Length: 289
Length: 305
Image 1: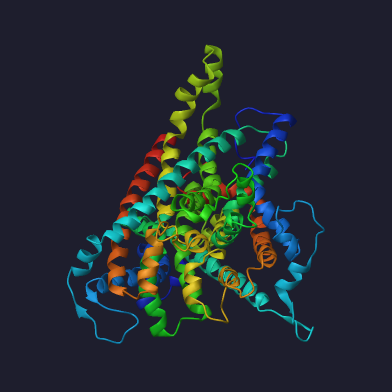
Image 2 (image 1 turned 45 degrees about the vertical axis):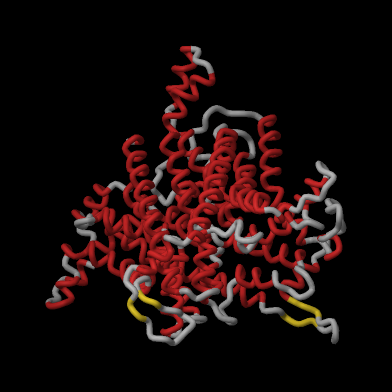
């Protein structure tokens, strides 16, 4: 973002020091979670809370391997499967929504239909709508059609949830391109698909990437539908996390913290790389820089 | 696409006609939306007029508007709406204040800005479940950090989640912490859209900082602030995950938001029809708010141009 903004004034290292302190205070709950991930069970629950402790990687190991108390042998947990599910389900559905949404966004931007705004409004409403409103019929639909617990059911559902967002965001990128260049290409005899794939798409690649990341953040973290519609085999990490809460021997916060940390890392790095595009994403593409 | 249409007759040519290209490109998106969103919505609309329980095999019977009547005259429902309003109101106000202050902080260019900004943006990237789980731990009476910090200020042990007011405050703080960065991003967009020459002119006029803010900065961020309020109100109105994990609506029903209540009536008590009716009332409210949101977006677009 730094490069794109015309900032108000410049400040020096003193300012950096102050903002870093504020930033760290704001970040401290996350920092606490990350620290907890490196604590032993006793350290995690120490009173008063321990700021200094001997770090251990045990929690990260036990996310994936659990040693049995009776036999002493270690056994793989299902967590690797849940991580795979989260990546697979979110990745596929956001990718599908991006493809389908980009086509629609191109149409909305270049071939305005009658009642264009109405369609766009309906699309936006489906995104703003509380998921709880549609969840009853979707639950019944999935139960009747046997989609409940399958990958395709949840992927299709998440695709639908990402389409409004993709359409609005990608449309804002298409709107910014100069259509005269496209017309010039057409005059030179370029086919429609060539105009679309060779001229338009390359120009908005960064925007498409940002759209993908945003969809990913939203889908990656979705809980309610995943809770009701995934089965044992297709469970995602947020659902698995919520289930870890109901342990018989008390909640293992060190383990949970390790899961949260691992779950945050991919999104964190991708966001860092695409910070410049972030603003458009949070505002749905409705606000230009 | 056009070359595929060339030299072909019949349905293919008709379908790929340039006149229909727009409609054709929109079709896949609309189809998926129809199957997964609009069709369920219509189904749920139908259900709201019947007497149907998802947990029983009884044949549903038509009940007309009685479900709506029952929902709208239920004191419990009004109580849940009030709880939701309190949580939404206080959380959005808190987000505005924090977000605004953060935006002022980041409006200046300074070394390592990108990295510091990332620290502040992280809460938005956490899942609701992670935030819920860990705020629950922070508030935990025996070994929670918040409870420990609070115990330094009072002799009596304060159980954050023990009282209705404490529980609501706990949820509001968690939600506001998670989403203030969003408000910050919006306000930041407004702050940097202010033309620089206005400030330079103000400098020549020796206008005070306060005056500069009200006459130059504020008009530019007014519509974005409104946008932030509307968007966050719509989103907080749907608040489910954090509440469900931190308090499960308790103590008593003091933090049961409308979304949690809907979930309960639909999936714990299986009052499918009644919850559909309530869902439609909620949807109506959201559509009204979305209209306001779009109206503001359009006004902002006009302002910028």
